[in-house]
Structures are given as structure tokens and as C-alpha cells.
Amino acid sequence: MLHFETGMPLSRTPTSGCRNRFAVRRLAPLAIGFGLIATAGAQQFSISRYTIDGGGTTSANAGGTIELSGTIGQPDAMAAVMTGGRFEMTGGFWFPIVAGDCDEDGGVSKFDFANFADCATGPDGGPLSLECLCVDFDGDDDVDVVDFGDMQQVIQGP
Image (cartoon, rainbow, N blue to C red; front, side):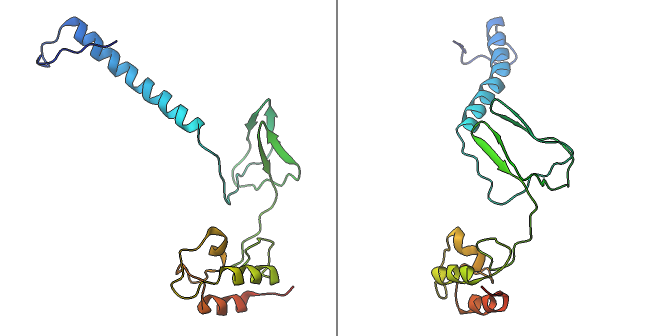
């Protein structure tokens, strides 16, 4: 337990007060660190669309840990699912996302057009769900006739 006396000038503090203040200075960062670790441990992981690049060696796992090592800038092209504990990572080559390609299969097809129909809001009909952002071509937070014209330009077939 720390005890602080009030009303004492900063220039004149008893030895015990100096020790307490010194202890607080040393323990405060430690207490804050433990608080941040506890908070970070409770968070859920989510990577929506990113690539973690590494090459030159296979990712290793041992009893629940994942170790990523290698070079930066080389996409991972490992076909097998890499696992460690409750986590898994699937590698491979990434293709560019085409505007309107909601199912991210590399082309705009009737399946993406069906998504457009489900997302159509009309002018000023937003906010849009995440699933509908891929057909909001003009970025105005609605799916309307302007976006429909753009969808017609990029649709490729079945």
C-alpha cells in the first residue's frame, strides 16, 4: 500500500515519500503494461483482405505458435493451409480485385450481378453493408442507376 502525505512542498519530502514516489514511477509503467496485455489478449483477430508476404522458408508451427520468417515482397505461394493452435493461414497468389467482382473470383459474372440486385438502394439509400461496397462504383454510399451503368460496363459473362 502506498501512502502519500498532502500539503508537503515538492522540494521537502521525507525519505519514505521519496521511496513511494520512486516506486510509483517504476511500477506505473509495469501496471499499464499488464493492463494493455490483458486488453490485447481479449481482442478478436480479423484480417479482411491483406497479404503477409514472406519467402525463402516454410512457416513453422510448434504447439500453438506461428512463426513467419523470410523476405519481404515475395507473395506466399504455399498451397497447404498453415496452422498453429486455433489459427490458420492459407497462402497463394493474389489477383487484382475488379470493380464489381463481389465474390472475388477474378471476374464480374451473373453471381456478382445478383449481388448488385440485392444491394440496390436507389439514390441516397445508404449506409451500405460491407457486402455491398463492391458495387458502389462512385463511392457515394448508395447503389443506384449510376452504379448500374458502371456494372453494365464491367460484366463479363456467365
